[in-house]
Image (cartoon, rainbow, N blue to C red; front, side, top):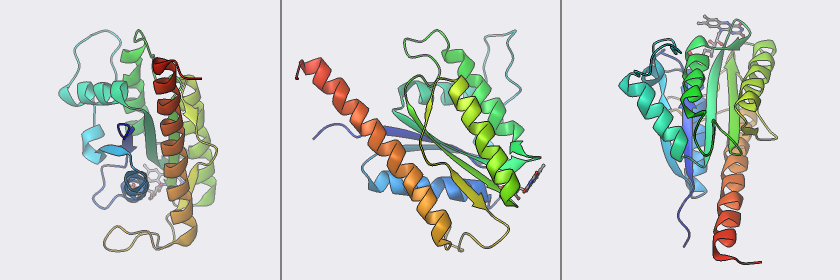
Length: 198
Ligand SMILES: Cc1cc2nc3c(=O)[nH]c(=O)nc-3n(C[C@H](O)[C@H](O)[C@H](O)COP(=O)(O)O)c2cc1C
């Protein structure tokens, strides 16, 4: 059996019961079901000081985030729509990936990234998703074909955090499936190259 691929799930807001964190966890659960090893960094664990270019000192949570990205095979990111784009907390967390610029695999180079935008209306879900895609492209990641746009102005999650909206669940599970299968294919190709197969 090959090692499971690792998928890092980032996102949510500082709010207890955050709908974007619940959306993230629905995707995380789907990716785990598909055989991925999941790490979740969500909510208040993403409250980081503004990324500071003038020091190499980083808070422990910033170092944890950068290390987790360095070893992952895929990423899923969920942000609430704040004033038409991703929240400052999520953008600032992604700015910490600048610390990966000199790695052999810089930033999110070549890895699949599933994106989830949750807002209180369709307009902000679309613009937030678009902003997330732009940032992931800048970080050299490969956004999956489907991004999840979740309009939380109607009930989406049950008390257990389960997704009670069929359309939202389909999107969240499809994003997980696309990230996981792409990561698995890349891992398979890498191992064949290593073994000199083909
Ligand atoms: C500061 C702030 C700005 C927001 N801006 C928008 C917005 O522009 N459009 C929108 O539809 N919802 C907006 N919302 C609502 C959130 O996108 C929505 O409540 C989302 O579900 C919050 O995510 P959370 O449940 O993970 O905290 C805003 C909420 C906050 C707190």
